Length: 162
Image 1 (cartoon, rainbow, N blue to C red):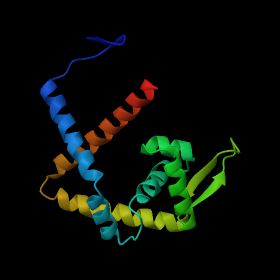
Image 2 (cartoon, rainbow, N blue to C red):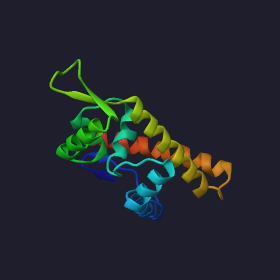
Image 3 (tube, rainbow, N blue to C red):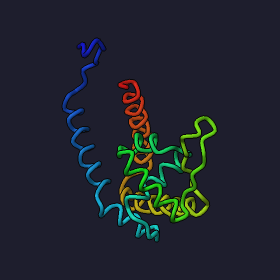
């Protein structure tokens, strides 16, 4: 099959539809205020739930400017700029001038920000461990490996679409 000049392999559509439906449910579940609140409570962190994903992303991917962080988090530039200002006032990030572009300030976690991210990571581990307690180790390992592979594939696919 050809799509916009690119060869597209046709897969079992039932599996693709099942995957699509599962993703919609997962995204809804993970983006719910209740889940964010439960994670923050488990971590013992008193932080606006809209802010912690930025901290986690900065921890995972290193210092970033507003535009890059907005692109990677799927939020608009002004929202990210406002949220980074809040995180800076809270002492969770520091912004430093980029050596490559002086107009760009990269946000980086402070020691306090890193402590909060670690607490969130440990809380996520506890919650996921409880949720997957009925799964055997082989299935947990397969889920982790295939989820990472799928995320990487989607990121590469999106980059190729630009």
